[in-house]
Image: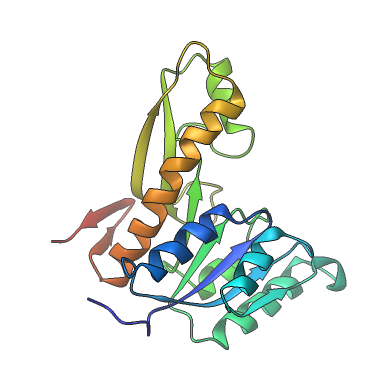
Length: 205
């Protein structure tokens, strides 16, 4: 068991449903960690409202006020380090992070992606799965490296694709699974139950 001394920073851009799933897991004590900071690159993202509602420190950091990505990411780094964060969680954060940020928090950044990686990285995931005639999709929690959606896989959940599926229906079913496996992946990391071995993530008992 870990205590709330294991601190998360959650980076968001949109409505923050995965942030809410993490908050809910913490509040029912199935996830014994603390969110130290929520940062958004979008001023009016609903995720920030979720953080305020639960008395979590939140910050809008405007990329437009910085001369380039490097300076913006350095500001992100400074805000996160000030909270003594153990793990950075990307939850719908719509910016590609650069080398400096990734190296600063090496093996301490995770992301949730709405496909069974390595299939369908990037955007428009459900549309592409349907167009390809895939019979299954799902979601993946993975470590973040410099390859977009290419880091070592922590957890996955499989979702069947039905003949009458639309992007919206498939997205909704996948999102339900995201809300389950993202808090679980965080718990495994907080409890030191994962070991990185090259591209593989080994689960320790």
